[in-house]
Length: 169
Length: 169
DNA sequence: GCTGATATTTAGCTAGGCTAACCAACTATT
DNA sequence: AATAGTTGGTTAGCCTAGCTAAATATCAGC
Image (cartoon, rainbow over all chains, first blue to last red; front, side, top):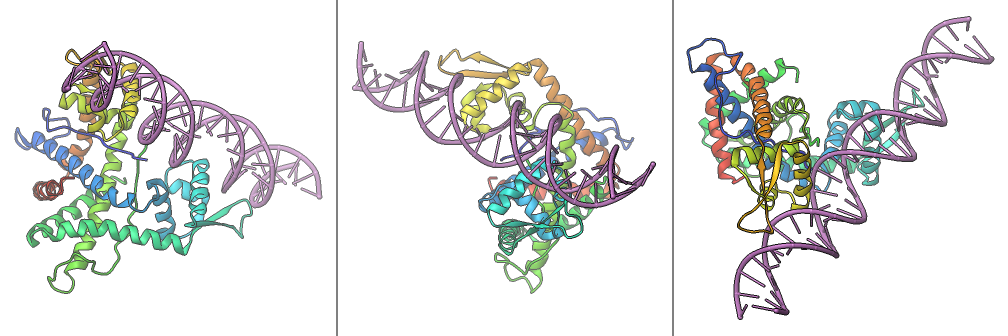
């Protein structure tokens, strides 16, 4: 179920709207940075996704399972909302997770209309193994860098996180 | 064509394999960086993907179109290979692009079995508009940062690019 | 001018989205 | 307490976009 790519192609464009006057080339440089950052993010995730393929379970299921494992059990509707998917879609996804023994439906004691979805021990194990593989891949590459480069990346990630948090998105 | 997400969940884990001895905490710190980098990349792309949705054309089609626009016309088989998809799948994708007037099939003069796929002027325009939107979104956010932060990001992107290139990924 | 390889298309399958229609159960209002 | 409306979940039916296998057309070599 690949969800995929977009290829931005190499830098372009005139300085765009939204570039405050910071000298004539400032906007252009920022937009070139934007393009490269976008492209780097795409390639990074493409690399890491391969590790997820090794789990034998599809990305949507893996993603839902990780919500359950890291965020705890919740109702089907909540899970659907977390995954930005319709309840109908999630209902089927949970069927698949349940069939694989990775999650289970348990009746909600407080509301008998609702079902709570819970990761099984097997689900937790499989997700943890996957996360380990994924992070290990990236960790290995990061470890091959010079310590100064790693520090530079760490600062950059902090900056990015701030920027993305602001955007609520 | 949603393709999606993986949620790594917050940091974890013991120092993993692949961490050369650099002091006791080095591996753990690197793997925390790996987790945060992964997460930042996911959130960044999720943000930018919204702009692509505004084009009204699906991501796989957009991606194939961008290959044609930035890389030039090519045969269906080549395009399929570029997109890591089977020729049969690409044949249908090209049907859709052609129906939307964004690309066209032209007979290959050198090999009458083959078809060359070419972006139309409308295809180029639409892709350029999309790229502009996407980059503009990111550019606007980057422009809101301090100049020093932008410089830090630029160095980090260069480091990442090197790391990813090495991986041939 | 056969024979085998190669490029594309067509047919039919699957997974994972969606909406619409439905049932069961909860909530509120008489 | 009955009834009406709302909410949670499932089922049915459709779509897109992957896949493989098989059909078709052309090419290349002998």
